[in-house]
Length: 311
Ligand SMILES: [Zn+2]
Image (cartoon, rainbow, N blue to C red):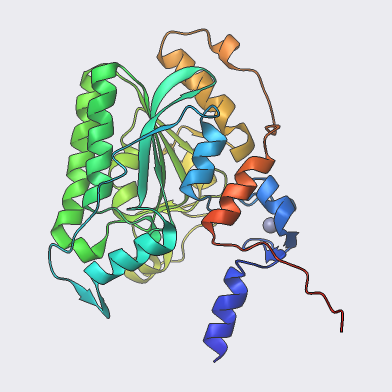
């Protein structure tokens, strides 16, 4: 079974080495995790699990999760080989998360904010009823408390298993952000690899400030679909952060190592604080080892024991 072998090799959850999707370099997994999943050779930013992102962004011990109990249900009795209801149960068990979005409050370099992070490992970070509801609740809470909102997007798009209910979340999240804007509270979107479909076409693109990680794929339809439809060759770098910055769709590209500093600086501006005081460059956090453990745990990685060959 060549396919199974290929799939296994590509994921290599327990492997010591990982192959860079961009440049093909072999990366030592421990070092790769310490660099928060950024390729040491080409700087390619791999997808980061939600809990690792929170550990990297929020001040230690300040993240207070909200609405973790929200669970989706199979409103359409949708069956895609496996019934959606069963798929949800299995995915919850596999990922330890109830859906594709983690929300809560925290401080970033001492500045209080509301934080929402998408989790790609949960059904491709697809947006369904729970993702939409959590964003709406977060915006309502933030408006009430006057907290700036930071949303990290990482998604394959709308969750097809929920049909129109999932598409409705596009309008719902945009409405919630509009009300937040009218309340005079700032919102910042960070688009990470990949941000596609209904997520790009809704909340990820309508925040006050639009940031992106380097090299992230950001778009609505995939490049192959577009190329086939318009029957034209697409320009180089199409749908990547750098291309979108050049075209004016995003405001700034921020590398993962600088993201926390940059967010703190922008949040300071937005909340009338001294941005210089909030901006103390710290390229690699000293606690870099901590998210490694979280990532290993999230990936269900078991510590590799050396087999004793005593006889
Ligand atoms: Zn690379």
